[in-house]
Length: 103
Image (cartoon, rainbow, N blue to C red):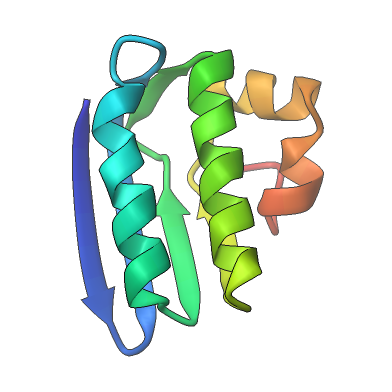
């Protein structure tokens, strides 16, 4: 998994590439802490290069969402497709985190 976090004009864009699962989620936890400390008004999570997500990865995305909401920020997810999109739809995260679930 590769993580890339960029901050521009009040938006933190987090791009997650590869697989977000039980084996890689530990790399994601410091990102959640960093975003919680910096408190950007908007967080955009780009999952277009994500190939696979499991329940642990979904839990990490939900943790990030809750952390951002706790300080009054907003979070959107974009670029979800294939297996990650099927998982998001299964647990109805497409309705909560995505503006366009047909991505």
